[in-house]
Length: 72
Image (tube, rainbow, N blue to C red; front, side):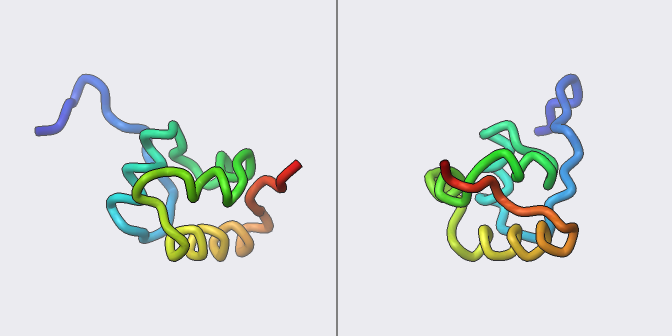
């Protein structure tokens, strides 16, 4: 059942698994640009988001001239 009163923001993420999409949305991440503010290590801590999804997201970010945040 969809909650039409509170729709999720539209995402521009590439085709990754539903658990990965849910993990990102639960973390408040819906747009590729938001991923530039978090590190790969932070994302890997999210339940449902694994190395394959990170690799796909990283490839799409690089195509757009973006990257995950750097540690530090």
